Image (cartoon, rainbow, N blue to C red):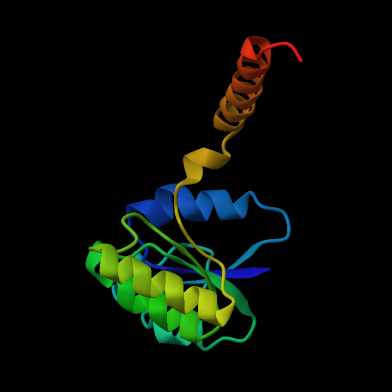
Length: 145
């Protein structure tokens, strides 16, 4: 699966690029950033994110741009048929986030915010443990039948 990255700042360089490079079956198709000096060695680069959105071989994009650009770029990516992982905050206010959600749902696009901690093993373990513990407490305190 080919993924594009829009924005080449700290979140892209420090988190998204290294993480995607560890994923089997994932190829970073290109990084897009208006600053030519932001090119990442060994990864195709463009200064125009529209070039990336126009590529039929790109399944999804990471929107790691400044916050005020999240809505515009995410909606363009959805219109282009790309799945989107958008950095936090998703939008500047509720109306923006609701608009993105509605657009993604209407297009059948997967769209999520980068709450990556929910997927790390320690958090998954705590979630599983707390669910089991809550169930066990509920069962133990239930009246006998």
